[in-house]
Amino acid sequence: DPDIAARIMMLWFAIPLRYMSMVLVEPSAPSAMILYGSSATLVLFAATPKSFWKFMDACLRKALKLGQTLFSWVYLTLAYICPKLGDFLLSILRHPLLVGIYRMIIFPVYQLLCPWFLPLAMLSLLVAGAQAAMQSASRPFGSQLIVQVLGAATASISCLILTLHAGIRACGRQPDPLRNSFLADFLARASRA
Image (cartoon, rainbow, N blue to C red; front, side, top):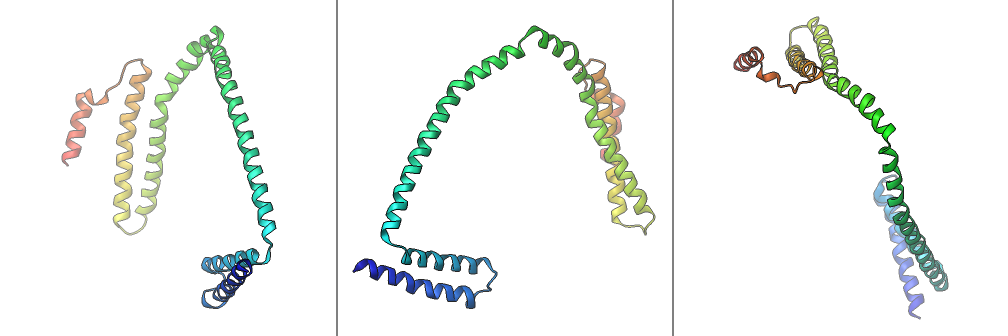
């Protein structure tokens, strides 16, 4: 019988795979787990009857059909609901009261506070760099101190430029700090040095 011969061949392959997973490779290695899993799968296929796998095949096909039907209904439901929900939310967001709150409170506060986040972040980097440079200064002179001093200097220049940018934006004008001749000359001299 070809079915019995195939089952015997699977068992013959399962035995050396199990031996290799125990002896030839380290038992806790992933390759040992793969070999052990392969041998266990072959033994499972060899030991279970063919009717079991036919039953499992039928169950999986029914589960796939059920899943396909379920997901198609979910898709159709979402395709119907999402545009209506979007229109509803858009009508709420376009309500004159909410538009007025946004224009009179939220947008001006955002315009006032938003430019100051980058200067504050750069200031925190400047403080951290200066503290690290102070700690390194107590040790013998080295390249780490130079790197930290240069980092603090770069952070201070960036903080100055970003603060000017935020200040000009807070006044209501579009900023361009490099149009300031003093700052442009200073940066040009610093880049030549």
